[in-house]
Length: 238
Image 1 (tube, one colour):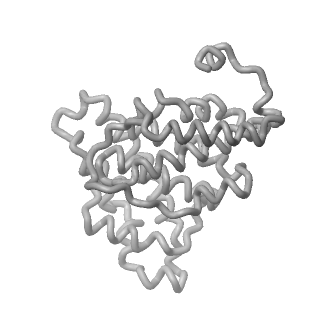
Image 2 (cartoon, rainbow, N blue to C red):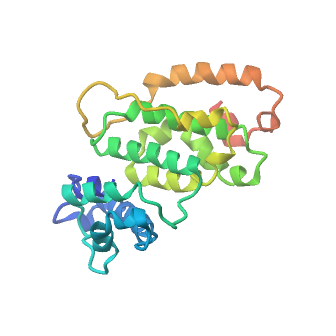
Image 3 (cartoon, one colour):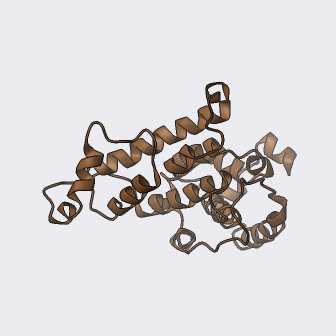
């Protein structure tokens, strides 16, 4: 993901005056910090880790080449990902949600063809979370959950907005029902065609989503979260 940001066409000599490029740099910094925390959590005395000792020592060094991730560096870091680290990266559901959101961000940068699959997964996650608003941790993210289920959020989606949603929702995805968590465990299916920078058109699949939502509401009409009065803004939209 950080490598994709490095290779993004928004990186230019004038990117300091480009808000989008500024956002991308912020996302890159956050991602590099996460990867670096994972790498620093690798115990070089471990038998398993010592099998990749040269690579581990390279990336644990103070002068590790984090500034720009080349193809070779990315391949080397991917090779370290399977090693045991003491870094706490969250629940299994959080890490799987990360993968969905990273794939979504790559799609926005034209580095993946899985935009529609990602959008369906994220929408399904938000729908499942919207039934758990009685849980305080979920309720605190209620506004974001509601936004993710709107056309406007997808129409204006950027890499930075997707990253913001990832960081907030990854902390609560484990609170979905067990059956809903399977959303995060199913494989992606590639959308047809070459990867190009995405121009989202959420209307294409929202008819299907509305049908799914109506079916869900008919089955869960007595749920406490669904019987709460709508806020004025929400009732206006409805």
